[in-house]
Length: 183
Image 1 (cartoon, rainbow, N blue to C red):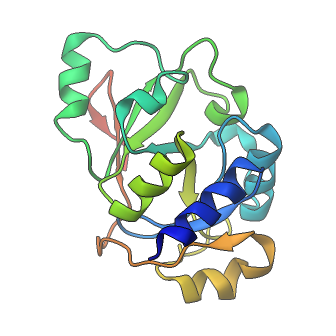
Image 2: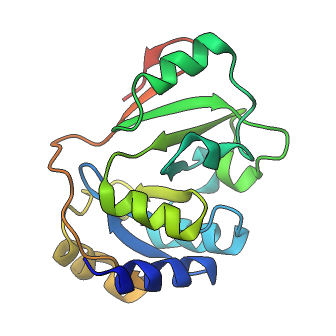
């Protein structure tokens, strides 16, 4: 994937667009988490209500500073032992975390990805991305660019073509407080 495509995707995201991009197991839909209209549009595309909240994906833990409360040492060590990688953690949301990201929850789901292309995209945007599977709610997630185009092509602004990391299952989701695996 050329640098120009990553720059174009970042430009679309920072201008309020919604894109699809590869992650560890499936293609994700992403947008700027600070842009309420972009997040609302992404949820409309998925046909999913705002109450569930969304996952944020980033290239480094520091990208989540605006969205999560500071972690104690034990939690930080537990989380960092699994990052970067396909592990999403539910962490206490900061007081400034927008409601359109956390939904009806006091936590926010965050992940530092190990997927190279997605890390480059987050670095180029200089922010984490909303990351939810590229599909209509309740339908199978797209695993390649062709499936995204067939299922969502007319509703999104760009597909960042690339390979997933080949994982069979989507990212694990863990509650950092209880250490319970939710997915």
